[in-house]
Length: 228
Length: 138
Picture 1 (tube, each protein chain N blue to C red):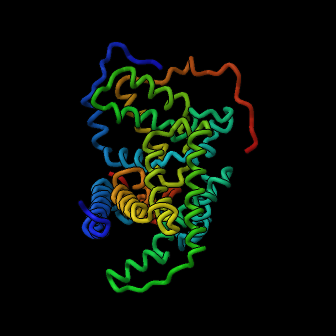
Picture 2: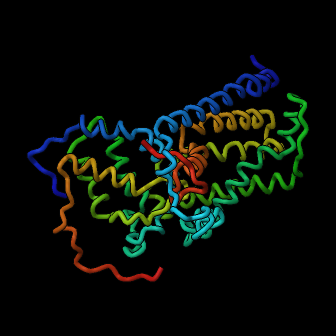
Picture 3: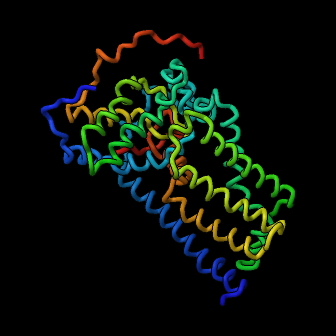
């Protein structure tokens, strides 16, 4: 019968490396197929107007396009846009700035990083969980969202919420902290491995679409690739 | 929608078109996080009582998405269902905006291309509405 220490060492060692490898290889796979499905364009095809000095003229500045990104799609959805923004910022920031993760990093790699206080970490976690609840309720009660919702959407909400719920419970030791710690690590690894192969791939393609493709209304930078 | 009865669905040709754009279609379908933030950028949605069938993501998921999903078992019924959304519910104005960068008009335009290749065209006579949509100041 395996004891807690053996299980913990296994899931934070080989299993974590495996999930990281799956994430990295999946990301490389997606980028590889994106490069194959697109091609570089010759300079004269690029969206340049003769006589125009720079792309900062005529409202094509980065700030204008960033405003377009933030405002156009969410102009009448202020609440959803705001919730989405703070959700994504908290989701990405939290794992990298909390003390328990830095403690593990120090013990494995002897790297010391800046950590936020427990209260701040709790606030960020609650922001993520409340945002996920908001998205879940939108999917159930709002007609136009319900019409396009599928099982996958609930699945990715679950795998995104699981590490935060189990991490919160484990840190505050509400239940058996050994079990909740194992569940937290496992759920985090499942989420990491699932990113390139589920709808969470929008994390990768959000940036690829906006920075590498030839300028469209979606672009934040003028890229040099177009679809084949 | 008008479907040419004398023509059978040419699955091989449809699959050839889908295979050519396979990665882009698959990625767009996967990237769409079903947030429905594109809905308010569609004027048809805004002027038709915000009915869900005008949501841009709903249109491409239930047209090209449906054709792609059923690509191995394509039948006339699949095209009938798909063509409802791409001819009647979309005018290809390119106003729709996706926060994740999915090119929705291109996807619907590809669905139209596939439908046309199978002899499926909009039935304009039956698409005229009895009452004109009311003007809404957005």
